[in-house]
Image (tube, rainbow, N blue to C red; front, side):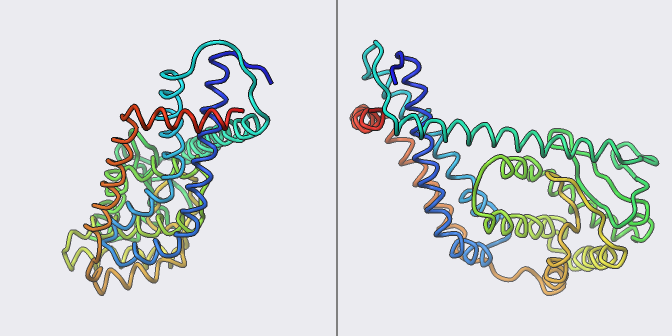
Length: 304
């Protein structure tokens, strides 16, 4: 297939994204089990960050390779004029375009479903906190840029002031960590479900820790709020929404952890240092002309 200068750049960049993203995703899938086990031994916040990096890393690496290496090397070393684009490059380019398109659609769908779910609630009062006439135990942070705390009347009336303060602090911790934005990113990118579920589990534990603040009374209050949510019956929440009690099977483990304490974290600093060093090395490599020229040769073979 013949293509002009800029069209060839588009095909090459899309194919590059596909190769890097799919390769990195395969590696992440192989390491998923070991990464989850390691993250479980770390501080919840750092463990969640590790799993998020591994889960979103393939897509980020694909975009970085396409925009940070493929495109610059092409613009620096490729001469103008139309040339043929090989069939393999076309197929890989179409896969890359489809991956980006489907990801954008999935993120938009998750955002729209959360918006519709929010619009269907019936606020009974409150500005910063919506008290809604929703059956079940609902306490959730809704929205990304300006999140709103939503609580069902049944849940609010069941909680003592101390329990409500702990539940509210838990949801505020989700907002502080931008967890809803992370949920949208996870919805938009393909990846191992094992990593997605493990990240959600550790994100809840991290919000528990932030809400408790190392205070035993706050831990007891939050544990009591979770028990009451289970007794009332959890309400269904929309995608990209951080709910206090989203998964019943995790409630018992969270309550036990709150009562016993989070335990000793291991390996957090070394893991973070390795990831940071790898990112810096990759960024530095992308600025070297020799590396870009060698990469251009590889991409040229892929193009043909």
